[in-house]
Length: 318
Ligand code: UDP
Ligand code: MG
Image (tube, rainbow, N blue to C red; front, side, top):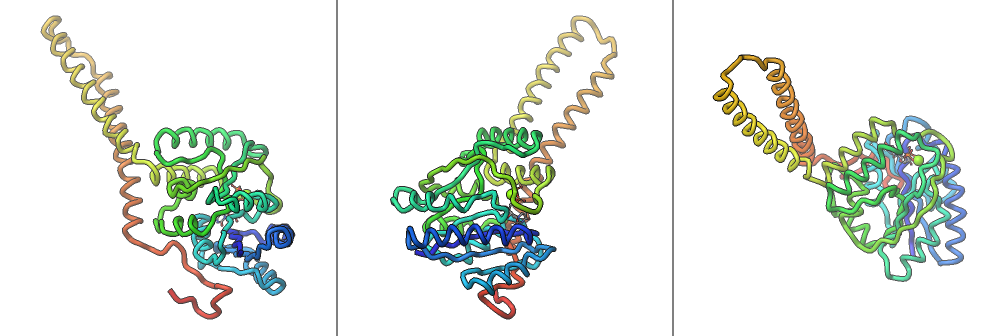
């Protein structure tokens, strides 16, 4: 039984050795308890620090370590996909490099899969301790929104930390879309998932790679990727405005017939024009968002480009 641990790393030179130490400890334990063998796949997502060097040093020390280095920063989603692609294991786990996803939970997760009842062991945080309150607030809003808009189940507070069997890994790999939103993809492929909850753990070393704006873009990605409700909402808004206009026309005709036409109403007209053109622009924007995603999707660009691969010395072949 081989378990692939996939770790997306972007500027994680400080955290990587700490992660490796902990993961190797857990691996040793699980080798004794479960007879499990491991490979560690570090996906260097175009880091600007010594992440790749650190990964190489770890490989010198331990042959189970593999690395994959991108030509530039392609984002965590691409790193996850590349890692899953490269994984040879019967099981594959996704973990962050900063130890916010405790490897110590792996034995328990594996036990759940070994019963044969589940295909995937996933985790979610019960608290958001140590996170800025504004960020927590908007995260919660996002989950509430997407829950209403999308048929795909996206769990509140779900982390990307999960252990999957080969069946599920292959299913996830079969979704080759360019705009990837893993939380949605995992929900979409289905399979039986057992959830493990734990309290938020703060980063072991280094800094978070997400700021508010990046998270906002990511949430739009999630909504556009897994719901077409905004398009329907735009159409509905249009219908509502037409109805309102019809009612208003009726009112104006009746009023003119009864009271004559005292030619006022210029300020209200300006307000109506502003409101209607605002709504139109907003709806065009929604449409544009989907169009842009479609555009990126039809280009069929690769999700990532590899600059160095520990398995393939020399220039990588497509
Ligand atoms: N990460 C990545 N590419 C990116 C941003 C992040 O591979 O462009 C990795 C990062 O190295 C880490 C994981 O994704 O292993 C989670 O990132 P981070 O801890 O900064 O996010 P947070 O836990 O603060 O949400
Ligand atoms: Mg983190």
